[in-house]
Length: 71
Image 1 (cartoon, helix red, strand yellow):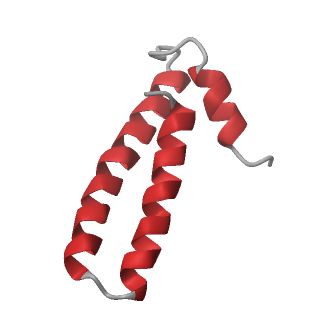
Image 2 (cartoon, helix red, strand yellow):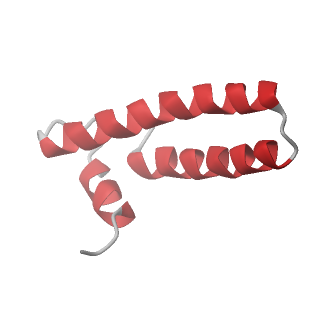
């Protein structure tokens, strides 16, 4: 899964988490946060791979650059 796809998945989970907090569904909050941890790890791994020049996908560095805010 590419960096852009992982970022989209993270944003979706974040929205789901906000909705779960709004109604205080603690079991759903726990499920979502567990999923978010896995996505966060995958994002960190993908970004580190790009920094080391060992991206799994040829366009991974472009995906990372596209999702970063300008400095």
